[in-house]
Length: 66
Image (cartoon, rainbow, N blue to C red; front, side, top):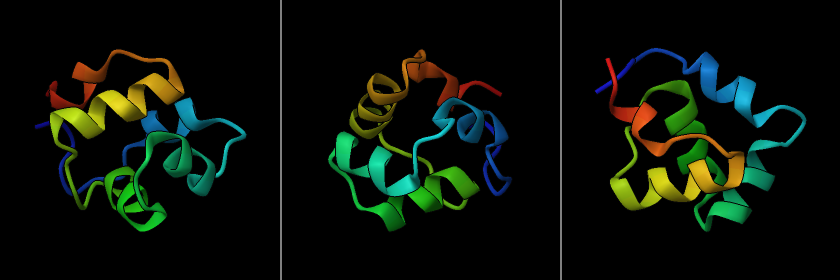
């Protein structure tokens, strides 16, 4: 899985002016879980990856590309 253990700078770029809390709320997940995904400490499951990608408008499979 892509960038495990490394900050996902690309995800922060997609987030833009939204806060972690705003993205988490729209994706239906907790802010702490989203923060762990963004920091690279956790990898999202497919369902969560799709939710986040729908909020931030990118292809969800990017989470799984190396």
